[in-house]
Length: 113
Image (cartoon, rainbow, N blue to C red):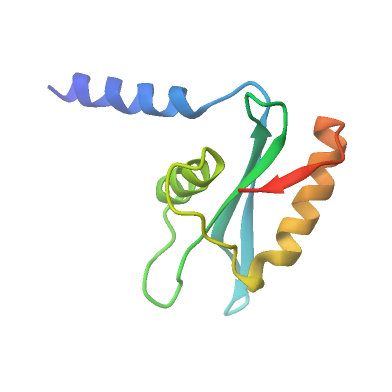
């Protein structure tokens, strides 16, 4: 039974991986330590445009979980849900990541999903 569960998780991870995708963690300083609070994901969709998906954890209420952050960022990348504007606290991170995407994907049109 445990073997079936691990295979299911592997399929889930492989399903979301694409050849041309990059990601980056959003970090903040808390009590002198750099902690992860979110994730940015970028890739090329079928229409040829490059989109950025994002996720941000509410650190006051929840601990950061990499799997949940990846799932939220990927769902926003694929637009599987309600369109939500990114919070202002991560705009600088998105701009830096967009500059990285311009170099990586060799395009000038980057869209935030």
